Image (cartoon, rainbow, N blue to C red; front, side, top):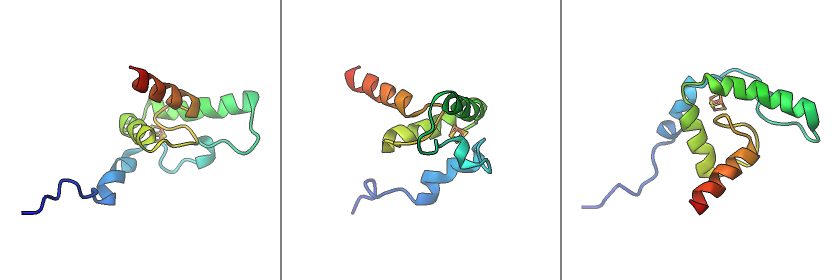
Length: 94
Ligand code: SF4
């Protein structure tokens, strides 16, 4: 009998956690930096995004997703790209 263990999960299951996201309906610009954004403006925007992540019931699923697919932009699971890269680096080096 053929195994289905290696088949991809249905997309609905993969993304279902997003239905409970604290950022649902929030302007995506809160989480993704416009081109050339720097300094205090960037820090303030990221702080607003992270405040939402801090009370989000699916923060772990969100972070797991971002780390698994190497999301290159934005705040996911309460971490920006540099912070996620640090986590990945730590996981690689133990
Ligand atoms: S952890 Fe943050 S970015 Fe992820 S779903 Fe929740 S509020 Fe949105």
